[in-house]
Image 1 (cartoon, helix red, strand yellow):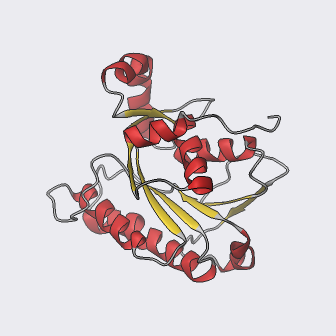
Image 2 (cartoon, one colour):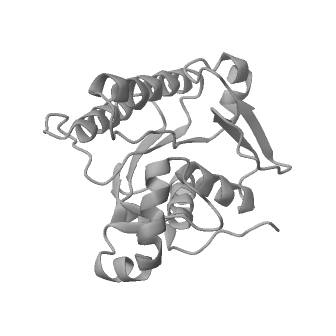
Length: 220
């Protein structure tokens, strides 16, 4: 869902010349500056390796819900897959800015009781040690999908169906824990262009960055 949001903002932003979207399934989007590749094994980027050095930033939005998963299974996707991609990019594109979508409540000590928070924290820590030009960890809270964007996770779709109408109330009562796909996407673009004052960006930071002056947009 976050990937759909930042892809939309990239395609609208005049400053973005090209977008290489790599995923497990097609987005269904078509645009003159979009190059989309569907890979069966995302740990192997060799099919797109020649193009990687041409890009200035990676927005890593892939992830799964930990609900019903063992720690080993969750780790394979959240840590192992993420690090396989990130190490490949760090080797081929050290001047790249790497932005990772984590979540509110991530445990930077990687020693807490919450399984998902530990694994996310360990992943963040490992990413920050890689030799990128810069790395930033995004920790959004509740994300309202906008512009027809829909989560691919059945559980999340059910949650959004219930809480979506309450978004204005939640945003008013808990602004530090609520954001939108548009704000997250715009914040990621802003950080890729201009950097940020800290590496760990919580929901409040994301909203501040995403609510800044909107980028000049190309016709949709």
